[in-house]
Length: 122
Image 1 (cartoon, helix red, strand yellow):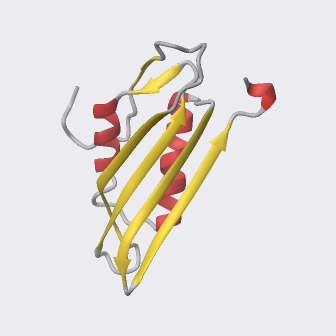
Image 2 (cartoon, rainbow, N blue to C red; image 1 turned 180 degrees about the vertical axis):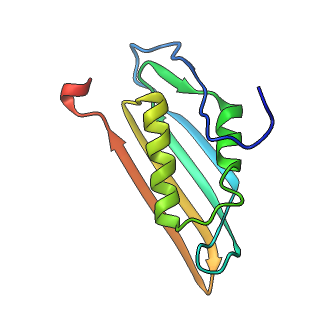
């Protein structure tokens, strides 16, 4: 596996697909660029999901998050994109992604995105 930033999320089979359990990640070193000023935005990205058949591999998640470092993105857009990409890769039973962006102009921003499989998708 490479050590370069990548948008490729790797997965592995859930070792206990018959059980609901949460996997939580805290990523306190997330950075992207403000699309208006080009200045860096710093955030903690928190991910909590209940896997179905697949789990996300940790190193690929790290490289995925790292891939945003030089990209301009609004807080709302990047948090939604992270959730969308994790849903596409793992099809979790449920997931919550929180982007807690640090102070910029005296304001902090927290964006919470949730997704859950509907009853007919389970």
